[in-house]
Length: 423
Image (cartoon, helix red, strand yellow):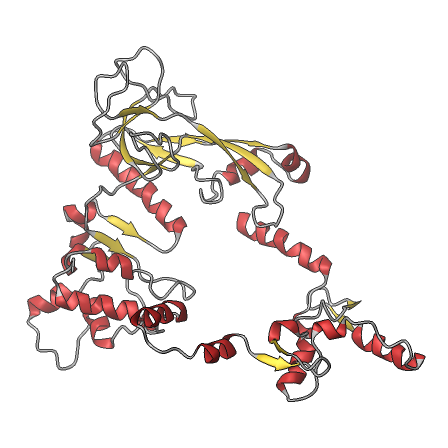
């Protein structure tokens, strides 16, 4: 076991199982625990939640250079930018910003306004939406950086995530991106130094120096659509600020996360430290977030690996309930019924599956009966968004009437989501 701290191992097990006890929760926050017989020093050591930005532990060297783990990627990159500013201030060097160059494609120019205001807004997009290239990349001489793309797959192993240091550059006042150069070379080449490398490039005198050139990647403005076509080409240096060295075990963790975040979030990080003293929790968090139990999938996997007996039929019925069609008499899962018909099956009444409903009607039946059946199947209901009365076929009505949306309103949803995202 990597960690020899029995109490911290107990906390990690409770976090993993989603059953954090109230006692350990209070210990982590430094709250009084009824009946506690621990010494004051032991209670203080169990308090791992920081007391705000002025907590003296945040100024310890191991936490100044520690990895910060957050659930929100936007917060992660904001922390990287703040640390870049702090690095430049402490190192007494100037901080520069490499601005990405975006070029809209023909389809994007025809569909949206791709003016200066739009391009400034694109720079604020998360790099996960722009093929791993940052809009605004902070850089300083000597700053640790990490590769965001594979650069050299040979024995140099300059792959995504490899950490290096900015060696030198020439950055003119009117340039949006630097020209990182090696002083022993007369050509303008972009170099980053990678520690621990034993290879030397031709013309270089130092090991680990490698030219990192700007690359171009195509990202899409309508990424959420099924067939995205609004292309934008971005040119940027494939780097990101990195402020954690390999082998460091000190971690700062944020556990005050959204309720949709996986219950096991933070467990892997918390289990990697060797002692409670190597981890700080950035802010208080509610107890209920880690008392929701474990998810079903991992629990079933562990039970299967242990060789335990599992009622798979019961699991199937609980996850995918089944009902018998009143016409074909076949036992089918709930997704093969329209909503109204499934409600009939649930009420122990006769309901038909979608396949039986789509069968042609009996032409020998009286005309009036056929007309009534067609009218019942094409019941007119109102759209829940635009409130207009429209015809919904049974295959379209897989949702309750109060949640139905017509095709026109469904097509507007991606545009509305995009406007909310872009501000």
